[in-house]
Length: 177
Image 1 (cartoon, rainbow, N blue to C red):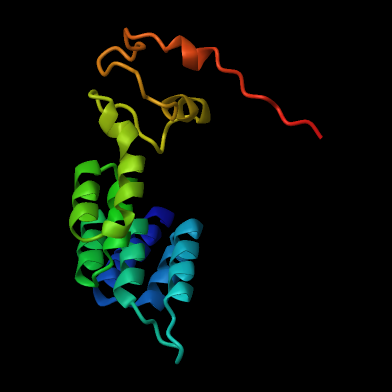
Image 2: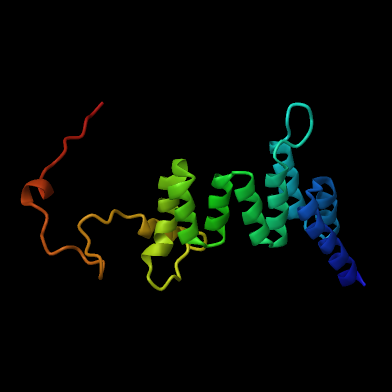
């Protein structure tokens, strides 16, 4: 019986995405037992409230409901329709659609282009596509952030040219108090 009731609330929440009834969507997510989703929608609504008390960007909040329900196509459509390409870029990055994220950053979200490339680089660097910046441990992230200057592309071994002796033997004096 409980599973049927949760399904009814989920269907009603899906309708709230289409009609952009955010107050009802918050109640639906809460009754589904999706506390984090209800909190995310509540935060999105509070961030986009206009000075006179109405929601300034209902498409953005409806897209947040769609993301919480797993309707990524609807969220993508809503973000694009309201012109929030920064949030569309974030959606693509979170869902692992790196090529789309870079394409949006290069064409419509230029201000986040550098951070998008930096975030997407670990996933695109691995040809097997198994590495994801969201799922790597702190140790792996620290190793992948090491400078790559002087490294060969294929084997990640140091380049065959050694460091000049003038650089390696240079000592930097330490200032004392």
